[in-house]
Amino acid sequence: MARSTRQILDMNAFRADDAEAKARETVKRRLANTGALSVLFYREPIEMVSAEGAWMQAANGERYLDFYNNVPSVGHTHPKVVEAVTRQMGRLNIHSRYLNQVVDNYLERLKERLPDPLSNIVLTCTGSEANDLALRVAEAVTGARGVIVTETAYHGNTAAVTAISPSAFKQASPPAHVVAIPAPAPTRFEEDIAGGFAASVEEAIATLKGRGYGLSAFICDSIFSSDGVFADPAGFLRPAVEAARAAGGVYIADEVQPGFARTGDAFWGFARHGVEPDMVTMGKPMGNGFPMAGVAAKPEDLSRFSAAVGYFNTFGGNPVAAAAGAAVLSVIEEERLQENARDVGSHLLSRLHDLAARDARVGTPRGAGLFIGLDLIEEGDAHRPDPELASRLINGLKREHVLIGAAGPYGHTLKIRPPLCLNRSEADLFADTLERVLSEG
Image (cartoon, rainbow, N blue to C red; front, side):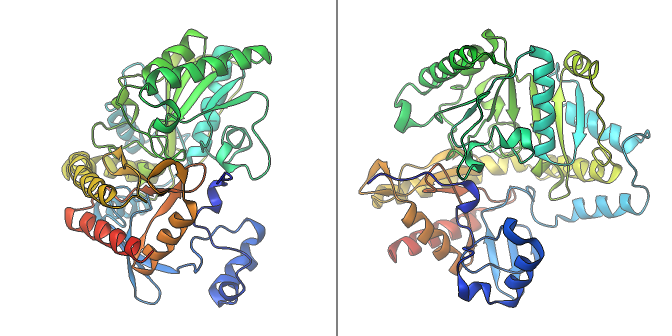
């Protein structure tokens, strides 16, 4: 049976036509305040009041294991981050046009984690702003406007980055200067993922040239999270990057989701592929919930951009954000969270492989570290997605106090993305609960 693609915010979302849920006072209040752009999760939205580590607590006292959030990357309300933000807020918080040692100390620590040529960092407040700025820099550097993305990519919500976020479209399609290519999925490219994906980039380059746009940038999230999570084989991204550069474009690594140790193998998702980006964009995990983001770029590229237009960000790079970011880096190092992501992620992946071997409705799990994709399929056929089963599982897991989201063009992929502090017993709790919910149909 043919499946229609789904818009990213529709996956495991509250249904606005659910009269019973809409009757709840807390839901009515939210809808009255935010209107048509309200976004709530689950058929019965949860009112959260507190969180710690990998757990969240609702207003009714029920606790939930959080396998959804990559925002509190080192754990909800981590005491070191809370203390750093509180201390700095009580001392000084100003805009970015004054000198401040807290900010520059943070930037220098972050640069130690990045490729040497990317020695300038522009801090912003959101990943959307970071990607927006990166696109503008790319256009200034290349003199071209065309952009290549993947078919279910999500890169943010300014006008410019919504245009390169096909998963955000409900009815429209990408504008003419954007070409969306298939995700690097085994179901599409079989054994030759590297070659097939690079060939798709080359075809997109030819299309953009034919339309008169040329190639400005190839931008991708290196774990391809919105596309359904595609991590392997490590290194498959390199030929695609080389093809983009050969055509005069730049490679922008969107590390908002795979960055900051999540993949376990490396601090950055792109590092698993042995490539060095022309720009790196960052966001959510940087401040463990405090709004901060940024673009790492080459000084000469920023100079070319700034020769034509000025740029500043009032709140980007404020001292409180820098304090939060520095605390996150310290926690990752001191608590060995990259190693934890690799070890606990490997254990969880093994549990899921075992489940897939025993249940034909579960596809082969894939991913790296604590970023895993798990397809729900019909009759053991990876080419037959089962989004209905995925939806039932998401809401069934929620009833069992486990929170998880969906990804992929059909919403049939469980996007497994818990905080980096997850331990083995919590991973086992998830695997056991998933198997139990699956057994219920």
